[in-house]
Length: 408
Ligand code: UTP
Image (cartoon, rainbow, N blue to C red; front, top):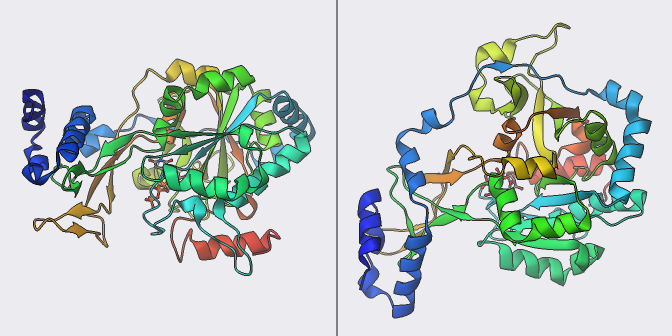
């Protein structure tokens, strides 16, 4: 029996096809599918018709960055302020590891990728090693919150446990799962990933704070005395996490967000750049950067939009609580989505075949009153692993790790 509310919902959103194999399912599978339909937010699907309107930008102007020379001259003060905050337990680290890593194409969570050549060296291990540098300098452990998704939670937690958290104390590691969103074809029809299950994917890295809160970890973090969250991507093996100088500079400059940035390697490099949008901090994605913005110059004659974000931000927790009720814009992203075809067989596409719906952390920056873009040296802190070969790949990250003295 299919409840009327379900039929009504599917008709309203034009998704009746998800019940195509309903009669072939066991009683348990039927119940699971009905409950998945009931709990899925299908209102986001209407975004398929109007992708441009969704991401319209306001008036863009430059945002001053704290560049390397300025950081150098204030380094002593910033380091002290940062280390004091870390020692006092005010800074927590949040690892965003809920993504699917489809471009890398490994079946395992990205953090399980072995970048070693003569020995095992996993991405998760690189990140923990980097965090340990600060733990040693501050002589205090830092709480590490790890965001996973339904798709990779078991594998991630089992792997880290098996590896004994690469020496990090278990009581300082807290896992939470992010939410999922339906995945559709280019006409906005939800794919089936099994006969009794709609295709879903993690709802983007912008959902991290709500998911952390729903998991009860915000209260826990506050009980530990945490006032700042340093969030970072799983795939940058060189990044400094809870970097005292960065933490100290953000605090000293009285900003509610700090954003690590690198000088762009070329005007058309594919990174989001920091700016002001309608007077508030913001990020323009590379595909939104017009020629006019790309060629604009500041008073020194340097490119006015010259600093790209590397997904390493420091957020003031009180401000996060303030903005949590505001809705984030939805991004529609073309991705490869495995699906059940007409014959009921599973297809794993080689090329993008549909849309995923994501909230992005960069949109949270625009909700904040102030932001400090903080320059870091690209060769020392930016080695993202997005692809197997070529740009931002395992190959390029290995070369950078070796350049920084890491034995592979
Ligand atoms: P990416 O934008 O590179 O996405 O994520 P991805 O899913 O890892 O990789 P592709 O695009 O499928 O190849 C940047 C960071 O945000 C996290 C990722 O784990 C990575 O650390 N992320 C992304 C999430 O935590 N959740 C998401 O839903 C998406």
